[in-house]
Length: 383
Image 1 (cartoon, rainbow, N blue to C red):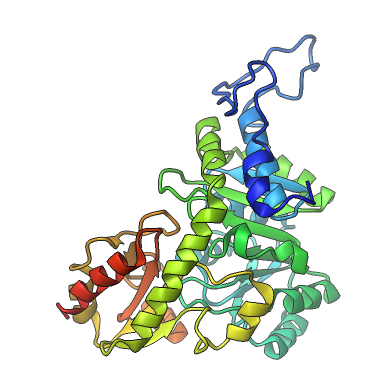
Image 2: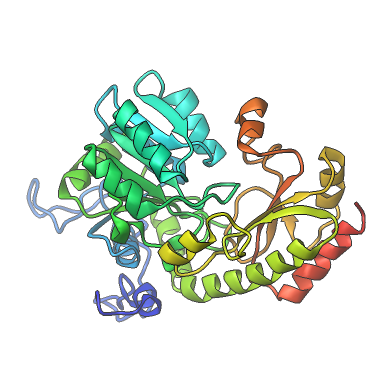
């Protein structure tokens, strides 16, 4: 398996023909319980909350994409994050990046503060971050790289090494890059998290999460809490993601090709104040992006000249770019983080990070790039 290229893994690992019928596509085991030959004696499956054959195939495939030993899939990305929080001893300290998905910020600032202690810091400056680790003494370091929505990039290898030095685990939310463009476990991280809702599934028809790692101890803890709490992914959703994974490589290539073209177009546009895309030389961590990523992804953030009214007019006049939350689908989406995906973050905190009312986030799809640029030009004309 390790010798296979990525494009081969996503099609063949977990995608073996059904051994009973020879079906080239694995069946959906849409079942809740399994017959036992004697009490406690079964064929590896007893109840679908615990295990399911369709989910097993998906987990095998995902583990292969991240070069991981283990994988668990969940009902959502936030369910995966919740399992990690339950896995930690009560009173743990979590040192988290300051620019993270709004749902992650809400979970850490509103749901778990009575159980754990959280501190949000900039993770892009390794020297400053080392001082934060030494002073705070975290149990776990939580990275998003690139971040959502400012696309800040953190040095996974350096921060993971610092965390290990101080006895902390490192979790990397790899949603924006997908396993095709970035593999944090290979750079020293302990756990990789994905919202499978996004690029991994890629068709805007499933909500799901995934955790990949190598530790047997973490496996035992995650399985206990997943089985005890129950945030597992359904067989049908697992089957849909397994199908979506087969085209992940070709989709990510097209996402990136279009994003590079559109980022260059936006950087030249008179009505754009600033563009943030890891593939541009103007990105502050462009060299780090080239070092730790195999590509630059399909996410672009830009700042429109003007304020909330100019942004609203722009957003109301795109057509191919659908005005919707989420990202990573084959269709292009446009989002206004301050009002939509990051509305749960207080305004003063958002603006302290640089998430202003003129910030617009694009999830660039796999349509024709020139058609997407014409769509953006039509919206700019209304501003």
